[in-house]
Image (tube, rainbow, N blue to C red):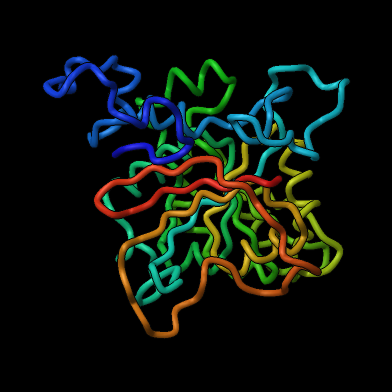
Length: 297
């Protein structure tokens, strides 16, 4: 893996002479110049959530307009919703209904890293069913980092569902290290709300209708101290966050594959009033896969 952006002086080979090899390059520069497997610590540093007082784009872009005001304590984690998605070259977010066929080992390492940094993973009910979601694991590689940040050993999973057509006997609800939440609306079916309650699953009302209001969902999770938010879709849920202007960051893996067919894009559903522009924050590359990050301007 190598970093392609942001561009620094380290992206060019040092002029130590024609025979200068990797041993002549300082270790900090080798992480940029050399195509090698990054450690999980390096990935965690590269994908760290922004904190109050930091600029939204590392390297000099404008500060995040949604950052807390002066009363917020500098250095504290800000409420931040990032999405992690993968797309083929021709725009498909999945193949045969799943994202795994267009993914890679490096993509899965970043997937695991983003989970290891998050307080909560927000995911749509259909994605839970299609991808066979299980509880997030507590990983030793992130244990010290999470403890220092005051996080639970594993992130919670918050399932978004209007119908609550969920099997509450699945391990996702019965075996999590951190209790799974269900986000729904005030008009959700009463019998399914009772079924969730009877199964010991906490439901969070974040909308007046059957479904959620995206901004209210983010606020409801933040009220529970869950401020480092990660959504893994699916496309309909991501589209809701985009249309509501609630998404702060998109981590998009561009897979060097073509799928054709009629697979969904990474986001669907209603469109915002006008396209919202994000700024490129970083690009990593391995084996033709591009691991990009875009942040709200």
